Amino acid sequence: MDLRDTPGEATLRSEIRGWLEANWRDGMDPNEWFTILADSGWAAPLWPEQYGGRGASASEAIIFNQERQKIGADPPPRGIGVPMAGPTIIQHGTEEQKERFLGPMLRGEEIWCQLFSEPGAGSDLAAIQTRAVLNENVWRVTGQKVWTTHAQLARWGILMARHDPSLPKHAGITYFICDMQADGVEIVPLKEMTGEAIFNEVFLSDVEISDDLRVGEVGEGWKVSMTTLANERMALGLGGLGGSDGDAPIDLEEANAESSLDTMGKFIARGPQALVELAKRSGMINDSLVRDELARVYTMYEVNRFTGYRVTSALMKGQGPGVEASTGKLAYNQLVRAVADFLILIAGSGAMGAPDDDDDSARLLRVAERLNLVVPATSIYGGTDQIQRNIISERVLGMPKEPRTDAELPFSEIKKGG
Image (cartoon, rainbow, N blue to C red; front, side, top):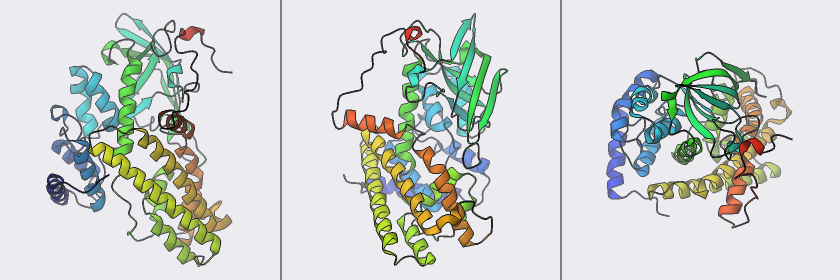
């Protein structure tokens, strides 16, 4: 594994750094920045040039991401649009769909959400029961989706629905673009332990979707969705490869981040030195238990760092994220749990019902509280810990696959629930 820049990559890195310094300024309007990114192709460097990208390699995208993070420039528009919906439309959509949706997506003008998971279809995604019935040129969709991030903000959703329950479960699925403002779409927030509502339930009651919003052929929904999920793994592989902010001052402003997930991400990115500094500030640095926990967490940071290097190496060789992505996600989940536990060790019982005071002591308590409340989500979103372990057991350790006796049965004959 050699992560040193080639001469060409070193030149590109210098050019990207110069471009970022010329175009980014602290405090600039996000919409202005999104437009600059879209016009330059850096909003989606992996996309083909004809659709607003740069046709870049994974190594070029990684270098841009690393340099962007170094100077503190904002990322491209957040959400699933650019990394997941866009590549799926590019690969499987019509030219009309590409022309209509890709530009606003790149500029952050329209937010997207993912209507995949259901109460009875999470880890087994092919078990979806949302129905789509074609009537002339219009599909009528009825069902329930759950854990839909930012559905309340989204203009469009990518949707999997079952068009034919007489077919085996993977064969009877079709993929659509759903207007989140259409009649019959009801969005119900799911309030979390943090008091926030990032996730939502979405109820679809006879929602009309024109056939020109179908992505791919009828019955190819599972195939199209695999493109979406493959790009999700790519986004996970590229997303955290800019290094940590371990040298940044620890001012605990993460306590005031917009969401608990933001608090977690920003604090974890500080690196292990942040925990050492907090232990010093608290006067507990010489406590033997605290020092043992610091050593454990530091080791987990190193495991995550080198797992990230493996993902980076694979991507820069033109390979898709393999089992390293599952290993990395599982290791990251364990890291954030360990960091949250360490903060409780430092903060003590004061992290339950943390005060709103504006001083470092209160901020530490709020960071500890927010991390401990949000950490369980990391073991669920993007594929549960159990799913990651299954992937590792089957694809790395060569253990027998779990029996799947219902794969060839008509979906209507498969027992649901219970």
